[in-house]
Image (cartoon, rainbow over all chains, first blue to last red; front, side, top):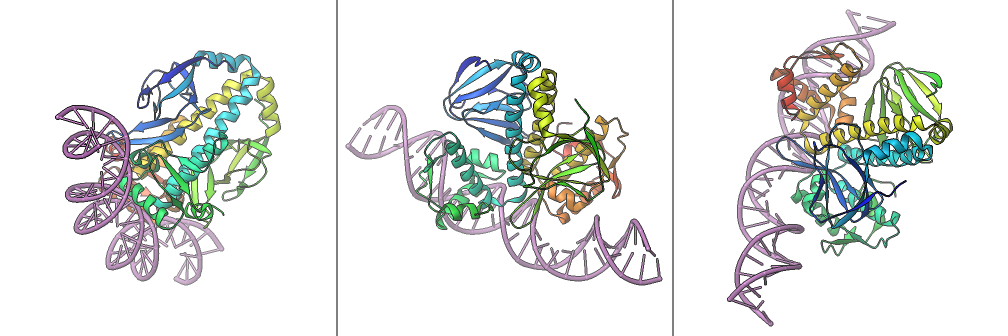
Length: 203
Length: 203
DNA sequence: CGACCTTTTGACATTACTCAACACTGGTGG
DNA sequence: CCACCAGTGTTGAGTAATGTCAAAAGGTCG
């Protein structure tokens, strides 16, 4: 697959907004981005936290249904949608690669739906910490301090909670010995088994 | 795309379970299916309600991460995963078709995430009724009585609520004139604008 | 008609939200 | 160097929403 243009995005900057025309598909090269969606009243839902290797912006709708912005300073590759479409039509080896990428996104979104539908605040936050850990692991990074480049408000907007409830959940997880040394940019998992249990996952 | 074997599934029957090996990809021909996921304690989350034309079971994981069962008597086409994989590798016209299907699923799941993350019980139920209406519309069926082939418990398991809260929300929507004549297999939308407002959507 | 299942409604408990105060952090300028 | 400030995070008290438990109402099918 072509790598496309490389684009720098500073932390906090918007890559595209809901309603923008769809011109490019992106792939995260460096840093973290978020996919967002806004309610009529302005409330924000974060649909996903993205890591290097994640794709975003792919849709055949006329306009973007979500927005995307950089959580940290980031870099993305931008591929014109027309290029991707043409590639899919002409190069069969892209079809399978795309399918694997898409099914991975679908499975990941199913996890989120499950978390939002069935888990209480504490389990949601525990699941989120484990999610971040797993993403670091898959990127081959050290897993010990789980890096958390997002604010409590960001986590709340992702987990369908308020900032205060997220903060309280962190405090509970600390009090029960699951996590420790929560100096906001990162968390240390003190008891993985307990944390997995708190997240309502099998040990 | 090949149509594959046609399989009948009686209402309530399982098509595949979480953990089953992935052998086939399915496409709904007739009826409604649900995609489910279960917590350790047995609680069920319905990830999606499927209609004719919807695909399910596509994953490159070793085993199914979700289950699928028939909500009504249904029929599906079953395509061996190997056939789909080979098709994607060799027939470029399938790549684009698959991409459109996959991005549609992704967008639909984003709607669910938004609903579960940001809406209260009443708005979730209102959104659900509108979703069913839209699916009927897209199938070219009459939209007036919105068909609801699922129980209150099914709706609750989809919307992250309890059966009782779903029932109360229906009662509220009736009392406020949004819907009427709720004889459980179907609902009549009495005031679409009000219902859309109750669902936190733009008028 | 009667047994069974689903839905509705009520009373109460629990969870998460709201509003508010306070603590911590990093950066800025005196 | 230290005091101040703004932004972020934490904690507390009271409130609103949803969950839980239980009972009654309605519908279906033998």
